[in-house]
Image (cartoon, rainbow, N blue to C red; front, side, top):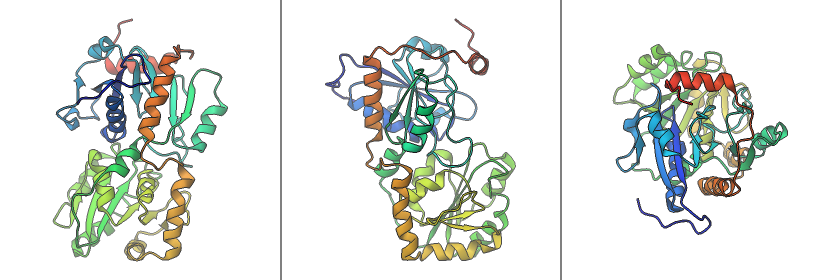
Length: 347
């Protein structure tokens, strides 16, 4: 990958993309592409048993050990999760793994782990800004994964309606077990093509049940294939997973099952027996529903231009050039847990 140095930076920076889940690749790649366009160096580190380095592309540069990541001495470390090792150099940048929503726990309260929060819109910006004591910066950039979502070019067209089923892992918020028999029955009719993707933390028994349904009418998509599935589908069936927000941003109808905060822009049902009728309704959406979907995107994030990664890279360049120093009190417990997980005890 060749690029000329950025005109706004005195020297190229070293970026480290920190991956603990397979969904992180689609989130972080727009940052990689933009950073390279700015003349910066980018390397990846994939850690833990929940992420697979074989999802990296052949041209992407990988560090294989934490010791190599420390020796790399990055200027900035990017993470979609809520933790990042403080013993790796550079400013720590939180880019989030989903859009902000009312579901409790998705706002990511500040826990002394990051120097820069790159938020998708006013809701999360306000939450983080109100609790800031000068220990970190908040820059409203838009969510970087939307760059991947909007820039994706679908490869095929299908004659049969494509129905995407996605579900979160929490038993209190998930509909995966509730609608399993209906998905099984409907997939066997052959009327629709089913695409299934489940949260990486979903119970293994539930994942296996859905994978066992694979047939010419049902295909299972892994976490690194979600963007492809979102573009391929005509309708999405979901629950409280934030992935259905991404589908709505493509201006396509969603059916939710027991959503905790139902909105006019999607069809919510509370009984599994209502699933077939709701999907049929979504495949022929009313103008009122379509108008509501169109209004949804700007209500979540004003940054729908596919340039969020550009704003993230610029925010990092400016923060590094300002000689930002770590002003946060160290979160000793969380950092101990990270060291233990990574088996890194050098100081």
